[in-house]
Image (cartoon, rainbow, N blue to C red; front, side, top):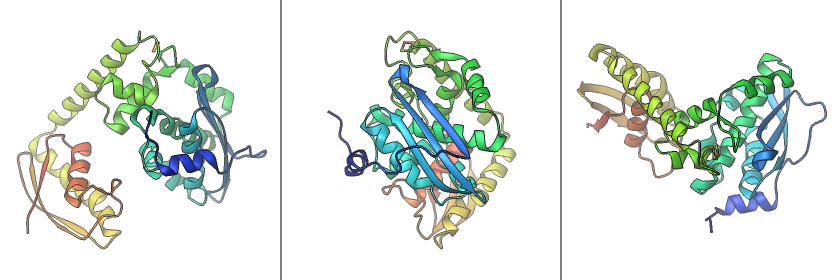
Length: 277
Ligand code: FES
């Protein structure tokens, strides 16, 4: 039996914004009925702001809860803000999802991405679906493409086939695609390692400084905090930290943890942050 948060249960019992917007400015679809769950999201957009959002879903309780909270998260936000929402944000807003149900948050993210692409490009939806169909399908049981698996690995740091199954459903039925999923994971991390090792020490220092300045300091300054880069010695990055970080996604994450994770993701997985007075 899976352990659901109170928020998941509450949104499942009382889903918000269920239905259809007849004259929607953007519509996005993810999943498929053949695979057991599907989400269709409708957006009304005025002056670059999402003024209304509704959804129709065929799926489990987690799919209903993820879709419901997603509509609440995006109404009133600008398109730029909505584009920054990730599947992890959806899961976090629900107080977490069981690992086996993370694919429901991914479905919400994909439907939103589809709708925004539709809105940005003014592309006919049929063309969009055609494009999706032409992507290389890795898991035929669930219709999951190579790009979807790659994105799930990239955005969620997935390392095993089981994790990919939890986030995308790929591999969760006959299992014939597991070998191909493993290849994609290996290729992703090889590519990442090559990119990291291709940086010279000077380039690495520049990149660390830039990430601290543009990503980390900007986030900390929102809450009156700040960061100063003191020194870099091999994989060790010495920093002075001030303030707090309400933007840290996990309430248990420390300020130092937030800095270290951001640098690991953006520059090098071996980075270790050392806080100095
Ligand atoms: S092809 Fe992926 S589980 Fe069957």
